[in-house]
Amino acid sequence: MKAVRKALTIAGSDSGAGAGIQADLKTFAALGVYGTSAITAVTAQNTVGVSQVLALHPKLVAAQIDAVIEDIGAHALKTGMLANRAIIDVVAVKVEQHRLKNLVVDPVMVATSGDLLINKNAVAALRVRLMPLAAVVTPNLPEAEQLTGRKLRSWDEIEGAARQIVEMGAKTVVIKGGHRKGPAVDLFFDGRTFHALVAPRIRTKNTHGTGCTLSAAIAAYLAKGETIERAVRAAKKYITASIRAGFPVGAGHSPVHHFYRFWKV
Image 1 (cartoon, rainbow, N blue to C red):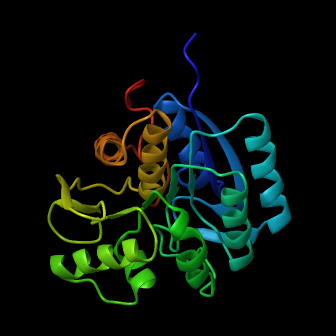
Image 2: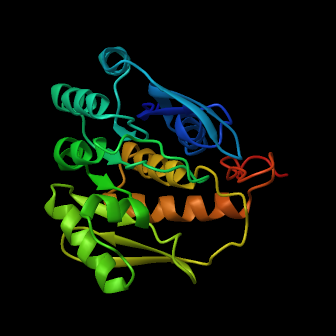
């Protein structure tokens, strides 16, 4: 019997199930990986916006990670919404303690609706504590601006930001280009070479959870033994197809279709 590949998501819960833990677990399942979770926060959220956020106690976050790793293990893991400095610190401690590999850091700061999902004092902790442990960091443009402290308008500026993020300790970085005009071009930097990952821009409102889904897909492919570059490229194809297949489930930004390969709408 073939060994089951496993991935852990450490992120917030989205009651609308389009992003966060729910999107990550859907992505893991769709890509043939057994998914586990450590919830960092609970949000009252739907396709329109976020009405409440409750961060869990860091000790409970740590206990969830311990429970999963000590019994089930993880071939890869990803982080999403880490609401404050204390949670970031404890996640970093557990990654180091358990010697976890293939960490994908999605520096979630703002929801698709525009709602802030992280305390401002937590950004520095992300830079110092978590990014040096990451195999891949996956910021969108506004998040990359927060991480680097620079405005990113031109392609040269985005490349400079990618270099800066790798200099912070991350092994590689994907700066997502969804906030730019034209084709959806993401920049992947492996520490040596820049790679432009190009996909057609899909005109749709079904984009809730795109960042969570991309980072979860990268983690899933890493868990299955792919190299970082192959995992990133495969995840880009998966999220593009998931966006294209999305369908409306609410009045705002509906989620992507994680299971487009298995059932049609």
